Image 1 (tube, rainbow, N blue to C red):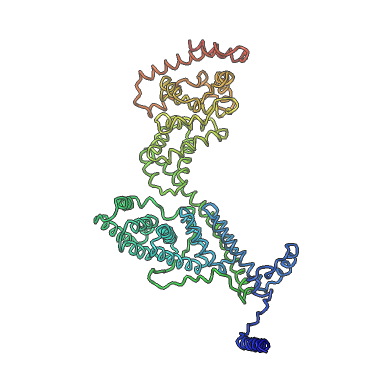
Image 2 (image 1 turned 90 degrees about the vertical axis):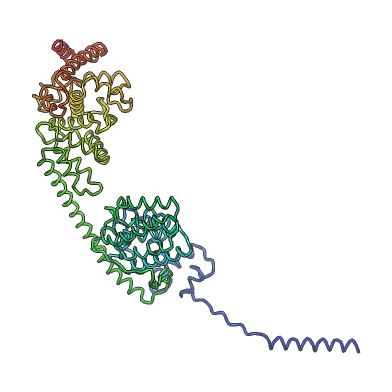
Amino acid sequence: MDRHDGFEKERRHSDHYKKREEESEVVKPKVTQLNQSDYNIMALGKSGGAYILPFKQEPMMKKKEDDTSTVEYQYRTWDALSQSINGLVNKVNASNIKNIISELFAENIIRGRGLFCSSCINSQMSSPESTDVFAALVSVVNSKLPQVGQLLLKRLVLQLLGAFTRKDKPQVLATVKFIAHLVNQQVTEVIIALELVSLLLKYPSDDSVEVAVVFVKECGVMLQDVTPKILHEIFEVFRRILHEGDIDKRTQCLIEDLLVKFTRHPAIRLELDLVEEKYSHHISLDQEIDPETSLDVFKPDPNFLENEKKYEAIKTKLLSEDHEDGSNARVVTNTNLYNLLRTIYQIIISTDDFEEACHKLLKINLKPGQEMELCIMLLECCSQERTYRCFYGLLGQRLCKISKIHLDNFERCFVLQCTMIHHLETNKLRNRAKFFAHLLTTEALPWNLFCYITFSEENTTSSARIFIKFLFEALSEYLGITLLNERLNGLTMKESIFPKDNSENMERLIIMPQENQVAESESGSSSESESFGSESVFKTGSSSSDSETGSCHSSSSGAESESSSSNSKSGSSVSSDSTSGSSPSSSLDGSHREKRKSEEEALD
């Protein structure tokens, strides 16, 4: 009985506990099934949460691509827009910025304005040296779509304030530089410059002063042109800090360098000045700013197709305006270049004194890259003269001594001369040869220019050999045989004009001066060939050239000219003797030998 009572108690307890569990059990909510054609597809992935083989998934995706009303289609276009904007912004530079702008406007940049701003800020952070390029890109977009430029400015200001509070110096430097170039491009008003400098210099430290120096260095030229009073106030704050001397010595040197050299940093590069009608925004550091971060995230648009059609009309208008602006810019550029060349030509032709001409030419406001036009025009004017004038050589010498830019450009002109020499007439060759000989004689151009010339049959044409002949005749007139020989012997083998690698090239050096006489006479200059008939490459000049160069080199006396002429004759006779001894009879035909014999008799 006891055992039976024990089993009964256990059964009652178990039934009691089962009832309590049933009463305390919580009803679980039913899980709704996700619809794959709705927005839930993005939460589960393209396959709806289950793995589908690729060959089965492709037909399914192709069917859904045709349906433009689904949220999935909007998400795919958003993803493609994000990748396209990111790629275009990352590969922009000064040379391809115009093409990138056209491709950007082809995308729906109004829908992806948040993506564009984020991409610009991130790309500028990764490469601060290209900040002016990103600012130019933003300036063009802002001129067409001002809401995009305003959103970028809001985010930059918030990023600056946050980084300044965290004392994140690299991010503050990059953001300040971006804002400075936006001030240069007039995307924002200049009042933000004064607010920014006031924020940085309110409690000056080494880091804050350094950031302020970087900011003023980038946009100082712009502030000086637009609002010189603001720039003056900023400089007064810097001078006060410098006078107090509470900052580090390195930071003091940065301020001193800024006060002296800030004008050396141009506001906008010529190739990045792309906008004529600019739109400026007023953004203050003290106002409340909404960064609109929701624009960076995908959201379904119930009016997606209508908005896409609206942007198609805007895109057509923007691209047509860009095409018209590009054609107008090319016309304006060609007109400005023509006016510049006409001004340079009139100054050179109408002025007799080279110092006065140099003064007038330097007063011309040449844009970067236009210095080469000045050198080319000077060389063209020299070529058009019937006889060489020392005015051109003295003017070129003065320009080379004043600026290294002109020196490099005249070197490029010499290289260009060597490549295009076959297009010139004999008189132009003579004038240009005397011009470059003057620059070489006066040390205005370095003698390593001869590395661009190799006096051999394979590397020169008949026009090039005539030019070399005129060049060395002028050099021997100005320097004399002895000094010219010293200069040539001082050149290294790489820079030497005369190839000494084998005997054939050395034999051609002996024959070429005589062939130059024939080539020159065939080109229509019989009188010139008579005056230079018995001259070699190293011979001193004729009486006509002596009279021309007498005014250029008035310091040379009559005794020196006689000694140089006698030296030249002896030098030419020695050279002819050496050629007769060194050249084999098999390499010279009968006409060449007869000419040499007659020359030796005339010299004796």
